[in-house]
Structure formats: structure tokens, C-alpha cells
Length: 227
Ligand SMILES: *[C@@H]1O[C@H](CO)[C@@H](O)[C@H](O)[C@H]1NC(C)=O
Image (cartoon, rainbow, N blue to C red; front, top):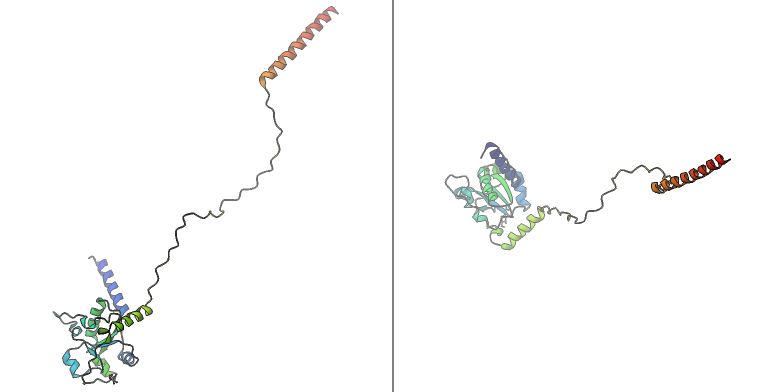
């Protein structure tokens, strides 16, 4: 891959990342939970961290918490069925949450939020709990819920309808009158019909007339001679 192609590839990658994964402040994350805007609220820290304390009523994601660890394969399997649902993840400081969200995005998940970390959450004054309240996200167990997420996603992201091509006309419409207007032609002067002369007839006429005149002339001469 040449450098131009590499830059192009990376820019597409960054743009697509920004388009799907939205980073929330802890305040926005908190308000979103209160308003019921998330279908899944996931903790991608270790089980040890989760058990110590966590945000109330979240889902500990056993498989995604491995994101970012070398030689560990994180998978989105524990969120199957939630592809179109609104998923917010948090970690210790937001970094592992971002890596886990990237795995989800690559797997085709559509509505992803980074709620940063327990550090920022606690610093903003929001509570953490120690009780065991792990939530099973309804979209992982109910096809109906999955379908509802998809319907809502399609409603919020209407795909632009394919442009309707005008049918190619089989008969071309008459070309607009773009021909230059001719200046009016001069009035036609009626021409008298010229009867072409018949050269042979004319020649005969002249010959006979000459003969006659010659004859009469001769006669006159004769007479004159006689007179
Ligand atoms: C957690 O869920 C329980 C049971 O549904 C509910 O009573 C409680 O208010 C929830 N806590 C928070 C902080 O949302």
C-alpha cells in the first residue's frame, strides 16, 4: 500500500469511528441513564474491579473486558442481538471502553457510546455500588426487543431513497425552435413568360421573307428595267 492509499484508508477509518462511537461526559452519561436512553450499560473492567464497586444496574461484559489486552481475544458475543440497540460502555478511565466499542463497531453494532470511566464518574460525584445487581440486557434474550431496536434505528436513520431515474424517452421531443429566423425574402416580381425562340423556324421565316423580297425585288427590277 503506498502512502497515499494508507492516508486515505486511515482517514476513512477515523471518520467512520467518529461517526458511530460518541464519547459522553460523565454528566451526559448519568443523565442518559436517568432518561432511559440506553438499552445496554456495560462495564468492561475486570471482574475484580466490577465486584469491588460499579455503577448501579449495569452489565458486566466478561468477553469485552479483554479488549486491549495483548494476546487476548475480546468478542462481542455477550451482546448478540443488541446490534441496533443503544449501548454505552465504561471502563476505568474510558480507554478500554473505546477499544471494546471499536470491536463492536467492527462487528456491525450501530449505536455506540463511550461513557468514559469509573474514575471520571466518581470524580463528578456520582455513586458507585457494591451490591450484586448484574443486569442481563433484554436485547440478548428477546427477539422482540432486538426487533424494536432495529425499527427505532431505521426510523432514526432513514436511508436516502435511491434516486429515481427518469425513464429515458424513446421518442425525442421536437427540438426547440432554435433555427435562426430568416429575413423575409424580397417580394416575388412576376416574370413574363418568355417563349423560347425556335431557331429553326426563325431561320425558315427569314429565308422565305428574303426569297419573297428578293423575288419581288427581282420582279421590280425586271419591271424597273422594263420601266
Ligand atoms: C437499579 O434497579 C433496581 C431494580 O430494578 C431499582 O430499584 C433501582 O432504582 C435501580 N438503581 C438505579 C440507580 O437506577
